[in-house]
Length: 227
Image (cartoon, rainbow, N blue to C red):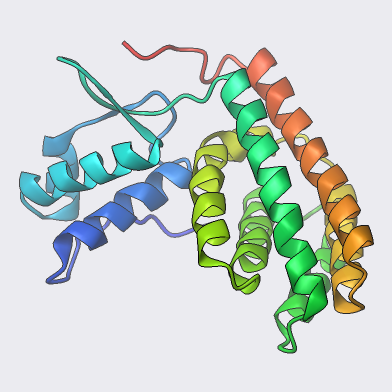
């Protein structure tokens, strides 16, 4: 199980440390979509004053994963079905560009091989949260390895918003099937087949989008609305 990021912050750069801890707690599902962020509770949990908490919340609101509601407070955002569809349109367009760039100069390190070995090991007993962590790490690696900082920045902002519900939508997904999709993408990248890699990635992301949309339509876990 992933470690809980909500532990006391120990750094001189408190704002960035607090920001990262709260962000990670949201993206890991520890603080859930629709949940109110209490400055007092977070300050006590992280053993800091309210000032860095307030600054971190304001910074999180700028990324879109936190919503500031006038006279109500700060809440973890609840992506709508349209939000998810629009976000995936952006993600698919940009991530396929990233993978094409990668294919022109495939990474010479062992990262892709390590990812391939993990995805080949996935079976019916694989923990879904562990799988999600590897999936997130893999797609983040694609963003970061394309050597385009603007593309990477846009992708990471979209990725954070998508991650809000993925801990819930991964339940029931055929992990072995998804893992093999990753393996095929990796194989295409390693030999530089950019059109094949881009098409495999596009189909994979469209499938992930459809699973998430289905979850949002049917789930009652996050059906509450912001004030």
